[in-house]
Image (cartoon, rainbow, N blue to C red; front, side, top):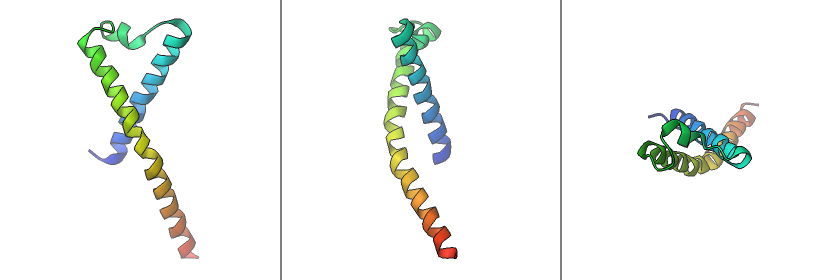
Length: 80
């Protein structure tokens, strides 16, 4: 799987997790649990684990984006 595709999947899961935590905090409504069979359901637990892994994966975006930005900026400066 390409890195960019994995980035989008991870970011989508993190966004889902953020929305879910916002709903829990504001309204005590767990969207993942409602959609996938309660907090004790196996599918809900898998979704929670995937969201957690996606959050950990997204930590790597900081270093990669900074590196890519510097590499591109250096490349542009060398063309002048």
